[in-house]
Length: 315
Image (cartoon, rainbow, N blue to C red; front, side, top):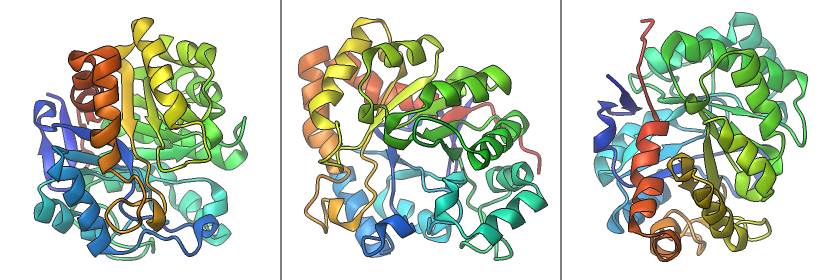
């Protein structure tokens, strides 16, 4: 039986509902100093605004070590009624102290991911800190700009090992939307992760129709996630890319997310588009362009498939 692993427990995929397939409630990285997502009250307001428009679930792709506040997620889910899928994993090396990465690799990165997926996530950013009971429901990894460095390759290998041990889906950050073909070649081609367990993120940032079709042909899920970034090729190319992929027969692989990474991009407190934009603006546009059935696939059916797994718990 497949299930979506939420912070409140495993859930039948058909109960997930309307889903923001890639977003952030909490995030703290050096590159965004001063714009941290670190306020539980603001996170609750954003979730409530999303829920008021019919949103039922959010996949929070913030991995370990960059302020994901795992201990706060169950209470937020209960307070708002919005289901939350949390992530283990690691982002790019630049976001971490070198000594922390050395420690995690030395102790066994795949084992670390497996523990967070099956036993419970660490409450904070200290590998020696307390572990909560809320389990991660996916692994988040990251490529580099048009390539993969040594850190990325080690993390991808550990993610693949953790996937084979647990069944967990793997979500991938692609820097400016690039290197998705490289990532797929490593995860799927070299390490044998089934393509339908891989969620390729940020493809809206690199709107190359040929690359999109190549990725889609593998069977992986394609995530378009970033209306919070006005300076990227997001809104004005996203629908165009989705329509082209749907016309090529790939409607069942498309995902949408807000990828809200700064306080100013939140709708509830920052004056930005935030999570509600997906349902207030993008869903009606998809319904007009592709029809209600396709929009239902993108917001409901596809996330339920992409975020579910036949879980194998090592604990």
